[in-house]
Image (tube, rainbow, N blue to C red; front, side, top):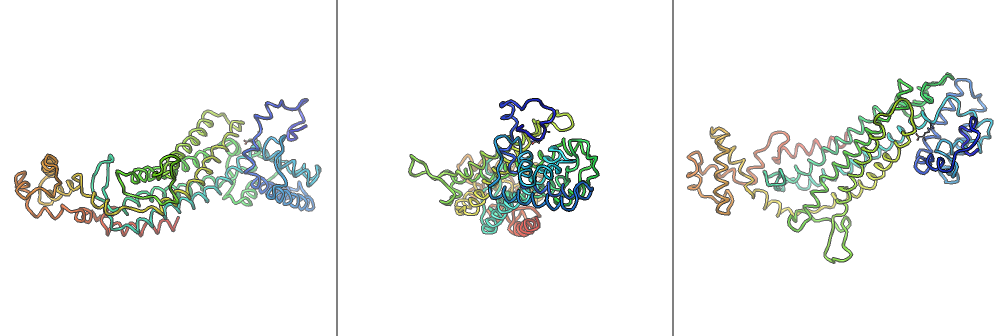
Amino acid sequence: DRISLWGGRFADGPDDALAQLSKSTDFDWRFARYDIAGSRAHARVLHTAGLLDDAELAGMLTALNTLEDRVVSGAFTAAQADEDVHSALERGLLEIAGADLGGKLRAGRSRNDQIATLGRMYLRDAARTLAGGVLDAVDAFIDQAEAHRDVPMPGRTHLQHAQPVLLAHHLLAHAWPLMRDVERLVDFDRRAALSPYGSGALAGSSLGLDPEAVAAELGFAGAVENSIDGTASRDVFAEFLFVAAMIGIDLSRPSEEIIVWATNEFSFAVLDDRFSTGSSIMPQKKNPDVAELTRGKSGRIIGDLAGLLATLKGLPLAYNRDLQEDKEPVFDAVDTLTLLLPAFTGMVATLRFHTEKMEHLAPRGFALATDVAEWLVRQGVPFRVAHELSGEAVQLAESRGVELWDLSDEDYAGISEHFTPAMREVLTTRGSIDSRSAKGGTARSAVDAQLERARAESARL
Ligand code: ARG
């Protein structure tokens, strides 16, 4: 009987087509060491409950250690006939411990509570690793911001020139969402930190096993409150995937900007050779493939999330085999981000900026029109009127093909008597930037303070 976990009531083994469909070892083998850790904890509660004596516990733990060594060395792997990681490892345990002792381990647990627990163990570790990778990207933005605290650039809305900002301010605007993503991973962990082990198939265990003891040994904060919920829910997986998708999206937005900045037309940034690629036919090409793959793969992670949500929708309680579909999207998201993050971070850390070009363009396209309107407001002009008068100045300058500072004092006086030559003090990039000095603004003083808080937040997370 090739599927030894449940042969008893069957007269015949599964058809090949079913066996192929059912098999998950190609992907769930990733859980092998978590499964063995769970088995160790389970052996201990069986012992505490009097279902294994001292010698049996010692023999079981030794056998599990041997099994783990063989898994790590590659000496033991899943066989064709193994349905999933649990069946494979049970076969391995029986080979080492013998059927009499090895056969005692399965009492009071089900693959349903096992898989739900192993998934959470995996996700909690993955969240920690990913958070480290995201914080590296955050630090790359913070370092670049620190190095460019005095560089004005055109701030945009609708991709149109809006108001001048500091390059540091813009770069830090990419760091904060990523720090919130790390915070989301930390918060996710509070919900993932409850162990379903002991839920059994769905109704809990009758053998006097202590789920809290298993939970503690496996590094959880506690055991789940409800065995049906413990085995049937995957919202924690979906939450993880949402955060993974959000990380992808938060990496894709600077990627898009870097792609645009690296164009000949923008020429705001130059990619380091180590983080750009060439063309097989066009010798001059230097392509932003890291940024494009980041942008592209972020869509794939959204697909992972959407796929799992579709799997979960409408599933009745408790465990259904549909839930086996929870693993591949999660693995795909983790693998994708694991590949992306170091490349993305390297790209950002090595980006060089054409700061003169940025500074030259910062006030152009009438980006100081808001400053003109706000100057009028400080002279007591209602904003509605000030907006109108500044707009007239823009129209006049545009009709002549010049910028606001090219209009003469007479031009301004002709638009309104509220305009005096003193207004020219705000017609400079520096004046505009330095005036926005309240918390969160783009003035050098505000950005310096922001930078310090960003560093502290990154270090705290
Ligand atoms: N391999 C399954 C999964 O990944 C766990 C086994 C539960 N199988 C079952 N027939 N109850 O979800």
